[in-house]
Amino acid sequence: MQVLYYPYLTLDTPQVNKIASCFRELYLFSPLGIRPRFVVSQVKFCDPLPGDWQNKFRALLSQYQIFQQIYTDKSFLEYIKHAPPPSPDEEKVTLLIRMLRGGRVEKEDERLPPEVISALFLHLAQEYSSAIRTLYQSLQKVKEQEESLKEILDAPSEIKVPPLPEFNLDYVHPDEDLWQFVDKILFAFSLLLKKAEMSFPICITDDEVIHHYMKELLKEVPFEVYTLYFPYPCPELVNFWQVLIEIYCDGKDYTAVSDLITPYLEKKEGEIIEIEMIFVPGRPASSILLNDFHPKDHNGIFCLWKGEGDAVTHRGRF
Image (tube, rainbow, N blue to C red; front, side):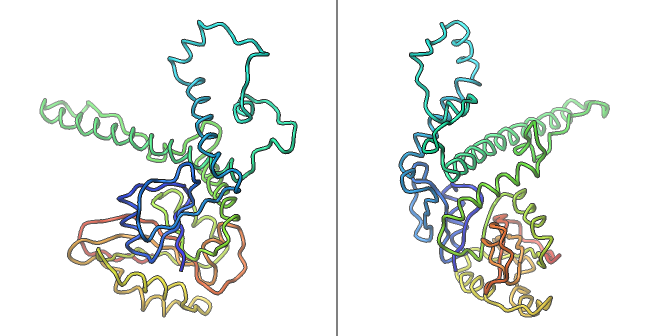
């Protein structure tokens, strides 16, 4: 059983500890240059980049960040306004910056491999998402403070606190809608997946938008969605997932699956872990991300990790 975290390349230590506790091992696609510095025995790293790019990726990322700072940071823009333009014959730019400025790449051997571009795109998308989420949380706090202030001052009901933007803000791009951007994210991830010489029956994410978009990709094949609740810690979970991916489903008969997961469809007393699971019979998760819909031996499982929740009773099957 091999479990892959998708679609991004890094995961913070507290989250990786909790997710890895539910599985025998958890794979992270992570280029050598940006690999997180933590040691968790269940976590395995896989560098999806070509061998000659594994050590160069960090330098490429630094080039992009410098370019971004020069062309978007106000202090740099002020400097550029007053500084003399560089002489063309003195200006030496790297391949990436030349591409970012719209320059053409003439030589075939100068082109960036698609896996390198994909890894750069995914890493920056993750950074951008994280920054916007932090901003969203700050806005949320301000809204709560405004509501409290209205209460203290006994403000009239006509005073309205402006609504916060949708949480999908972290995916908004001026030239495309949410799903077009998510499609690019999963396409970039699939390019990295092609380099991995292993099959992943289980894929896990903590990105709700990405997870629900997977349901759109799966509309051509049969699948079931369940919300599962596990006590934490739960050492026997390793065997649970192993059995789940190997259960044979005849047509739409999910009796064996239901028998296995029924004890986990209700919250119990105490600390629990909540996971929304997409169950795809006969098709490993990695084959779906690679648009390979041929039937396989193992069932595919996509999990949305929601983490710990309150202990209340709720029926979770859809």
